[in-house]
Length: 131
Image (cartoon, rainbow, N blue to C red; front, side, top):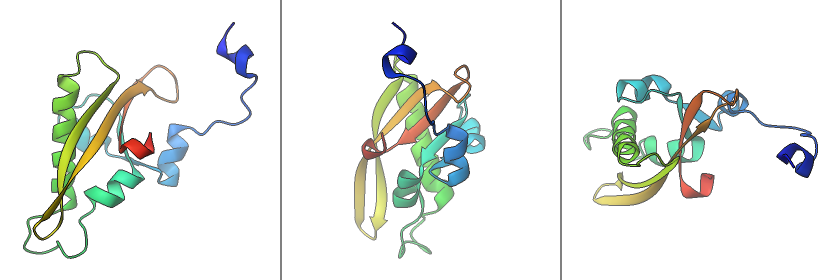
């Protein structure tokens, strides 16, 4: 029995494209490609707003920028993906400076799967609670 028969007809689906348009997913494909990724890449808005955006109080002389924090996230995601041995999901940790003198170690998930068309693989980088 196929899943279509087991669960009935799909009444509504929320596509990846809709989630990007709504801001639920943040498209970072161009930056990810510059880091070595070969597939369309997004991060969840929760991960982006909580950790990639520079917290108030760290602007200025603390060496923090959105681009730098995204670079760190994507670099560690790439290292994790390369050591994944074909898994569709990897877990890794990233340290983010949250205020002067205080870092937060964050568990992050990178998941690769089919995109909206069901054919082209896409990558989603997220916090565990976003899964």
